[in-house]
Amino acid sequence: MANLISVTTDCQKAQNKNFTSSVLVVDDEVSIRNGLVFLLRKEGYAPLEARDGREALRKVRDERPDLILLDMMMPKLNGLEVCRILKSNEDTRLIPVVLITAVHSHEEKIRAIEAGADDFINKPINIAELRARVRSLLRMKHLNDLLDKADNVIAALANAIEAKDKYTEGHNERVSGYSVALAQATGISEAEQKILRMAGILHDIGKIGVPDNVLNKPGRLNRDEFERIFLHPEEGEKILAPLRCLSGVRDVVLYHHERYDGTGYPRGLKGEQIPFCARIVAIADSYDAMTSTRPYRQAFSRGKAIEELENRAGQMWDPALVRIFVAWLNENGDSHWSKSSSNKE
Ligand SMILES: [Fe+2]
Image (cartoon, rainbow, N blue to C red; front, top):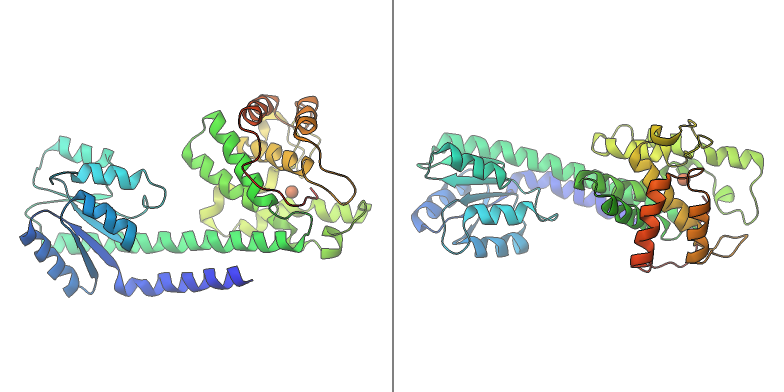
């Protein structure tokens, strides 16, 4: 619960920050820098300054501005290089960057877009145009911040549910880690890897409705209790439905207990009818469950769990993905994620 409270407070901070957005001005020409800083301050923003690309990267790291106005032509590290570095870094890629250029050529604009710039402005700067673009990009940045915080609230909720179940400590984080590792080994896009990172954390969020005495039952579950557990994928999907930022995660939550031969739940999908990311999480989830201690059995060794994956590939899991995952396990081991206790599917 402490996590939830701190995330909510962050959310409020993000909203309040609308009034004091910080804008980093990067230009080697002092007169232009001073002019932009003066204008931004007059508009109610908190301007920051950097004289070159290297100083800009330091300021971004230390001050986390909400927007960057970046001169294209600078000594040492030019604007395009700074932009590329910021946009390739997971921590800074969502900060909007406006490239400012004195060159009006079409090729220059294409290079700015390729570097990941969100917008560009020509010199001499038209004040009304700059004001409008700054305002619109900051609005977008704050919306992104709020969506990001919503992700965090949901992840905190998933961890709170995990804390309800004494047999699943650390399970969500490990499923997330294994899923991303398997996704990377298959070469799928970074966007899908991001979905999997979140889906691993959230896959069992539907267990919020499962009573504690069922989750923590030391023996085997009876039929009614199993039926209660079987509802968790659909309940999880319903919880996430209003959150558009998690739309890609919903299918994984809904289908993570489908089996490759069509005997899983809730829909009995078969083979490639099961969404690719859900097939990945199914393997990660099962492997972590097998290698974790349960109230009624000891954890499988890695070798035994691999044997089980291979024996039931094609029945439980996508055989091509099992091959890739086993190769990854053999190459990397599974010591990336520490394990203290364990899991009830
Ligand atoms: Fe599950």
